[in-house]
Length: 186
Image (cartoon, one colour):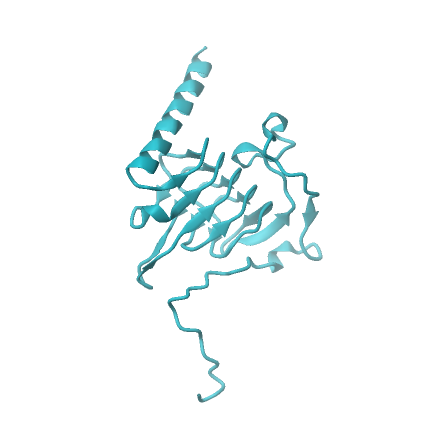
């Protein structure tokens, strides 16, 4: 009985937090998304935060939408049915696809394709073709929650060494000039 009451209270508080972030800060927060009270969302550019339906952002995760040094604001998108692990850092202008898992402590500096698990600093692709249900739970863990899950076969990346695969679109900053080749004088 007490556990049931606690669960109901958690769901109500999550809905209140979603509504607060939407109405007061202007963030785009999807239906059923759960954002920990200890997660850090960027209030410098709050309208740049876009989180999809049934995504969970766990304690200590940081989602940035601005670059102080580059003096610009960007949109950061997180897809539906994703899991953002504890203390993960999502840098500005990153797009995370639907059905993705971002491991705890990861630093995501580039775009993450749909159905991908990434981990590390900087985050690297560990596995693609994963299938998740609500809140980024893999389907075999949560078969009752897979109404939005995709049917994609699971596969490993590269020749068994997935850490060799960097994320695509790695933190490209359109406001910064391209690096020059130092071997030429021009």
